[in-house]
Amino acid sequence: MRIYPLLLSCERLRELVSVPETLRDDSWQDEFGREALHAALVYSHPSSFHGPDGLGYLGLRFPDGESLDFGSISGNLEDLNKWFLGVCIGPKEKPDYVLSHGDILSYQLYGTINPPMLFGAKKPQHQGIDHMTLVKEVQAQVGAPNDDLFPPLVRRAVREYLKRARVEPRVIAIDLEDTGTCLMFGFDPDKLGMEKCQQLIQAVSWFMPRCIGLLYSPTVVKTAKFVRF
Image (cartoon, rainbow, N blue to C red; front, side, top):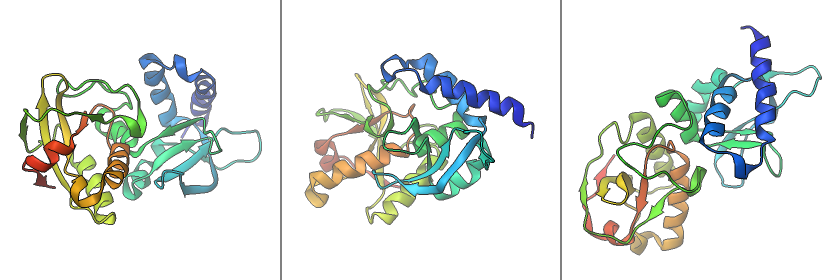
């Protein structure tokens, strides 16, 4: 492996994370995703850990000139997929950037962390774990999601998480005029409590590529016929 081009990606990545969050538009996200994938970063110590959200991360940081153990996201994709990890760049109280496991899956499925939204879904206002939309409508077309909307890699990651959480994995595809075709998971507040449902919603969002629309409605959960996956 030629390390020099990867170090150039690392330096560009360092420049990109200095951009204020308010200026990080789609163009920034696209370039960041390209540079982050192969950049020669350095493993943190410890190299893997659980974040404040309780989810697992590989820690990578920028080189600082000492003798270093280089690593990259692309060189760790197999393990990231195996252990359902995200990536924390610059682990500290306020990291330089955090990639969810959904972002890692997005690299493998679409070649980018910021692909176009699927099936007319609306782009969320927030990225990461807070991009599910709460809806009140109950008149909608629903059905079992196909592999384009709910790819097998994503399905596997969500199923394994819910299995560990001891929650039945149930899902539907739901089509609303204002939101496009999205996924909705069958977290029943009557059985789990609304606080637990909100925790599950946030966690499941973390496993999803950004291009897959996510909806939640306690009313729909109680009335629709969900499918196990």
